[in-house]
Image (cartoon, rainbow, N blue to C red):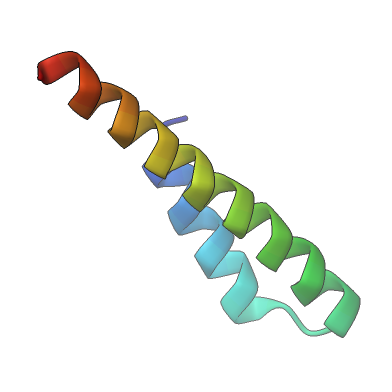
Length: 49
């Protein structure tokens, strides 16, 4: 699964999360995935320069 697919799935899960503990867990996973994607983009940009 690509990082973008993972992010979209986490966003969907977050929309459907009922319990606060569940929301916090998903939010943390989403933040990690977004950070990972930013890192991937930065690495790709550095290669292209």
